[in-house]
Amino acid sequence: MTIISLKKDWTLGERLGAGGFGQVFAAESPDGSKAAIKLVPKAPGASRELLFVDLKDARGIVPILDSGEQDEHWILVMPRASKSLRDHLTSTRAIGTTDATSILIDIASALAELDGRVVHRDLKPENVLYLDGRWCLSDFGISRYAEATTAPDTQKYSLSPPYAAPERWRAERATSAADVYALGVMAFEMLCGNKPFPGPHIEDYREQHLHNEPPPIDAGTSVLKAIITEALFKAPGARPSPSNLLTRLTRSQQQRSAGLGRLSEAHLGEVAKQSEAARQASAARTAAEQRSDLFRGASALINGLYAELSDAILEAAPSARNGKDGKRKGQTISLGTAQLELVPVFNTPLNPWEWRDAPAFDVVAQAGVILRVPRDRYDFEGRSHSLWYCDAFEAGRFEWIETAFMVSPLMGRNTTMRPFMADPGIEAAKALWAGMAEFQLAWPMEPVESEAFIERWAGWLADAAQGRLHAPSTMPEKPISQNWRRK
Image 1 (cartoon, helix red, strand yellow):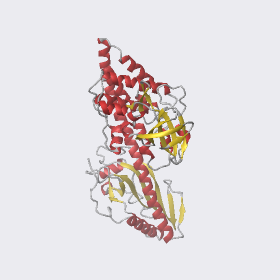
Image 2: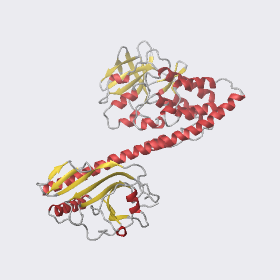
Image 3: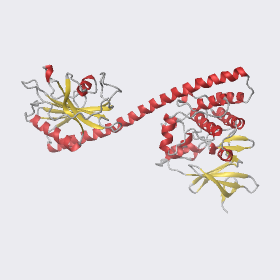
Image 4: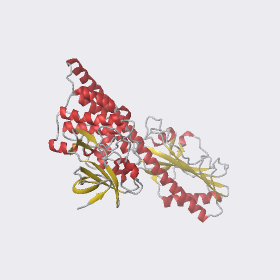
């Protein structure tokens, strides 16, 4: 027999269940009071205070009867409910419109009362309990407690994948709209007998909540279908407020006239259009998010390469001077009259080519290397190469590639940089075009390999410092294989 002493002594009974954070046991006090006790581990970085929010006088919330700590756990004592919504769904699978509406009214009523005060963050059937004749919300504070912990697997505990709103997957600040979204998922599950997004793995849930449209709702009234569809909008700002949900759910219990019924059907059609627009906006947002992640990775890779090149040059030639005075705001390494500039990485805009026959690949980031020498009598003052982070060879596989450009010999003119770098744009697009144009590649599109890259540019800097760097006698200097992706 295990006794936990708080304000009262509580005798632990059978285990009732477990969640992401904590285990739940039946408990009884000497005066016969029955309760449920939750043991929450003292996770690093999460204090006891995070478990408590100001819910004084709030209806529809499972109250905390007693609390304290013992050994490695915080302890919460709550009234023992007769069942959870998960138990109810398991025993009945899909439930009728009347029962579903009644449950949703209880949930929406609690959310409306708490709107602007607190966000649950982890609403799901396991946290909706039947207590004293109504459905109540439990485990307020558990999610924010989980989010505060320094444990490496916090994320999987601080959200429940089947019910987590798109903004939760993006780690954005949670508002009451996230709870409304979870209510929408539960409502769908109640009416249809299955979740709108089936997973089953966490990465599947993330993709589905961010990108996919929920399947059609094949049960319930048109009013209820519209409410669920709106609650599942991808954009938080497009979802109805808890008070709006409560009002409409309450009205939906009343008998509707034929005219209002037809109006509800018309509204449902309009909601479907808005839902698709919201899904597309969420997909675009996620594409931008993915692009941002790619750019961060590209920056780390190129800055590491630059550091390797710089260290190798300064180790081999200690008299070289390191600076930050490049014409393109890059780091410079000077030796004699030669200057090597490492052009900093920049974001590449979407569709930068401005040319009718643009290449098919996507460039996320761009950089470059410039080697300058005093201009000679042939109007030559160095060479520069482009560095692009792109999926030039295989769709979706991004890597740094190196290339360089030249003016076509048919144009009868030249540039002082031979060859020269170009940002993704019309000049580069013309060079990558299958037809004839005034620009063409002078250096093949090839993946950057650090050893060969460092050796080549260090050698060219050595030649430049000794006055031996000249314009290539022929260009292209190497065979050009048209290996990049085309439309």
